[in-house]
Image (cartoon, rainbow over the protein chains, first blue to last red):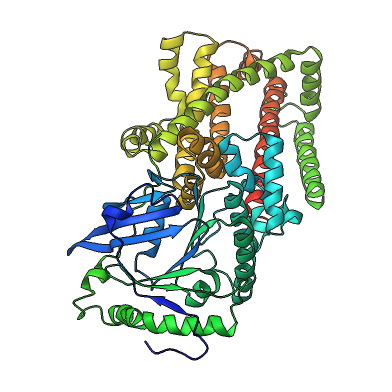
Length: 313
Length: 252
């Protein structure tokens, strides 16, 4: 890759496979907050099984902000669901905080694209929801919830109904609700992609401030490279069908960063070039599904991810 | 307020028309009593407490029967809504039973429980339980999966997931089922009381017929209608409105 002017602090690492045998040891994963090892996932289609994720290896340190970037359909949301424990991988393991994950848990709270706030509860009770499940008593619960509502600047709206909030406010309540649980890490699945540009810009700023204050580990999925550069310490680029980690970038820029900062723009352009080949592949698929052999697989696997939403009592 | 006025004028006119028909004397009094004599009977009924006792007895029966059907209906609805096996088995049984008018359970109820309160309570129960179960079922099936996923990542498991997420999220549908169940239960109660001699409003209606006292018949009918309206207005309409406001379905 050619070096762009003004981006000399871009550290580009070619992705190196993590050796499973050595990487697994518990001692090694002490400061690691998340270890994804050899995770593969496939779905059944008419043409046989299709790999959505193939041998994903990833390590995230405590307090790190990591973005997963890839074109649509590359399986980044599937990977997120596996880390969250909402889906099971076909093979491979995910270790969170030194423990192998078994299903969903309050140590890894997910923030979804839609805020997923509960309309039968008002704002403050939504923030208290997780605390109530933990069995924390009424007054303490209220205090913790207020503290995090304050962090997202929404104390004024504590008694509002959910439908009275704007899209951006809803996501801020969702962030407060997640933080109130004091989780090991936050998993954010394209949380800002349904918002308008201005709101997104505000939330990028707010999220960075929150992250600097709380030092939570954050795994953030997005298809927006600019967003990833604005937020992340490290960015992983995923390729499509099968989903593999293609490249890793470290972003070393002072915070809080601005979407419109020149350096952010430069980084984004560089990464965009990396992704271009992948995007072209997807475009070829969508435009010419009949003749494209390599993406025959991808295009037939339209069935949505089978997610366990929990049947058993 | 304007609606209230319109309604008041309409009902006054209706009563006037009724009084007019009575004055014309086309029908004898035991066929068409005057509104005044119906009012007198109502007043007497409240004075000697016979109507009040009837209301109290009927309300007690429906409270017991409806209460049981609420518990059973919601539980069965949850099972059908969440588990395929119950949907295929219990679900089809319930949709089959729904075609059966509740009063058809009377002979069976009499044989099982005898001529007593329990037979009537069973009728009330059968009237309400199916509607509540199907309402809960459709409510559970319409819970957005996102809510459940979000709750799970916050540590909601097993019965807490049901209590804190699934039931509240299904509440709008459960209320619809409850409302329908209530009106079925009220009808079954009256039908049962007409046929089984054991006090209650339905029984007062039959006494009116036996004494050839048409004004008592009409007075009791009015009380029955009034209770139906009151429960609808004081409970169901308020709850529905509250839910619509919460969910943002109406401008409050």
